[in-house]
Length: 315
Image: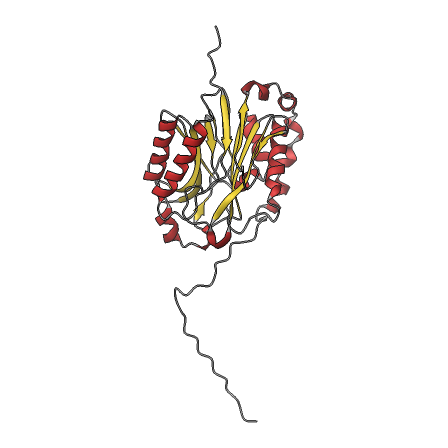
């Protein structure tokens, strides 16, 4: 039986999160314009940053009611508009937003919208930007039209090497890594660390990896952050150069991942030696967190009357 032809994949990391918008419609319009731009360059898949559809940047400062006002379900107007732009341009797109689940829970989520209507959602597992956001519970891997299996690791989910390894063991050969620098209390003091570590994860696991990062600018604005594409040998094959050319674009050969050295070593693993990774003695670290707790800033939304009295006693 002859192998069915696989559509070529040209991917772009677009580290943009539009600033100054006052409505989700304006955000979506900006993203749709980016899709139209890269479509002219033959791009099949565009990767936007974590929280790219969120109007607020400092999520940890928001109350529950404020986050709820910014949230949408998967079938809400913003994701529906992105899906329409995807169909209009023929470019699949990954975007991040505050998801409102069927039970009312809020998530830092990311969705890949494919031409034709297919959608794949990942909820961030290591959620640290707000106590009002719930954490996801699994790392999914799904098929794509390009002959590759894809996995999505959002923000801090990329900081744990074993998360990428789980995705690779589930068959992923394309890792999508949307990120926001300075999103919440857990932001790294070394913004380039994410870029360096992601290339290492690609080489460790024999997969392509795409990083698309936005970062905080002055007065709550957003600016393009790191954008890079690494191949299954851990070589960065495309990187954005700020400020002039922040976009990273590259063509991907799906067969390269299967032929990589890392895939051969994955097949030679000895899981019986790795019991210490999940041993009971590791539970002593269960409450440890590598990031500080989010602190709520002082604001003038309410006041508390305080009265102090000093009483002297005669001797």
